Structures are given as C-alpha cells and as structure tokens.
Image 1 (cartoon, rainbow, N blue to C red):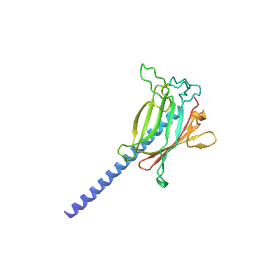
Image 2: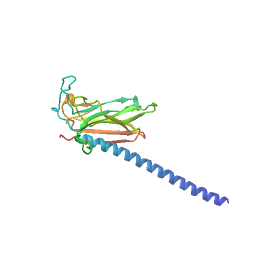
Image 3: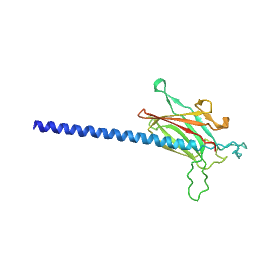
Length: 203
C-alpha cells in the first residue's frame, strides 16, 4: 500500500505540473494574440492615415472653416517614479472604414483610442471611438460611437517621427502635416511590453 500510494503521488504530481504548464502556455499565447491584434489594428489605422489641409468646410453654427481630417496624439502620464505609466490618446482620420452595403459612407472615418477609468475604480480600460460620417456640424475629436476594447492594457505610448527626431505629441491642426512614422509601445497587465513601428503613408 505504501508503495502504491507513493506511485500515485508521483503520477498525480506529474499530471498537476503538466496541467499548470499547459495553463501557463495558453495564458501566454492569449496575451501575445491580444497584443498582436491591438498593434495590428493600430498600425493599420496609422498606415492609412489621411490628412488633407484643404478639406475644410464651413461650420454653419460658427461660420468658421473646420478641417475634417486630423492626426492628434496627446501624451498622458499617471503615477510617480517607477509606477509611472503612459496612457496616451490618439485620434486620426483613416481610410480603413468598412462600408456598409448600400450606404453613402466612404472609406474615410475618424477613429480614436483613449483610456477611461473603470466604474469601480479598479483600473482603466482601453476604448475605441468611431465616427463614420464627417461633417462641419460635428468638429473633429467630437461625436461618434465609443466602445471598450479591453481592460488588460495597462499602458499605451505613442511617439511620432518628424523626419529629424521623435516627439511625444502631434497635432495636424498646427503642424499641418502627418508624421513620417509612429512608434507604439503597448504594456499589458502582466507587465510585458510590446513595441512596433508604423510608417504613415502620404495619401
């Protein structure tokens, strides 16, 4: 009986260790898939960014010209010291709209990425905003539909290359040109960081 108990204990321990290894491998795979999916979507939006300085109809409420195409990246830091984290926001017009059948939509839409604190105060979630109809009645950075992407992103940092150096913010309303490239650094809740770089095409 003692020998049998010992053998069963060894077998159980082996299966238990194997099970934990499988769970850890699946968690790592899911984490990598999430990071790759998010970075691929962000990179696609940036690679198809569209800015036209003359696309500026008049807002009927203010009688002022409004440029409907933008790329606006805002740096945002939270915490202090080693706990400091970047939760940047980004809004841009991009030619990645999937047009609904029989609709008057074009390939151009305005998208935004930003963080919102959870209702219970336990952390932040990453959101995406989409505005499919661009008009002077609703200025850039306003309107559209927003939805939560995930609550597993701890930080998101953008840096913009102007042809000479990398900068932390960008605003076509003053610069009147798109950056040449954008660096993206995504930090998940596990602490792992994923970095990629997207070239911005000049449409």
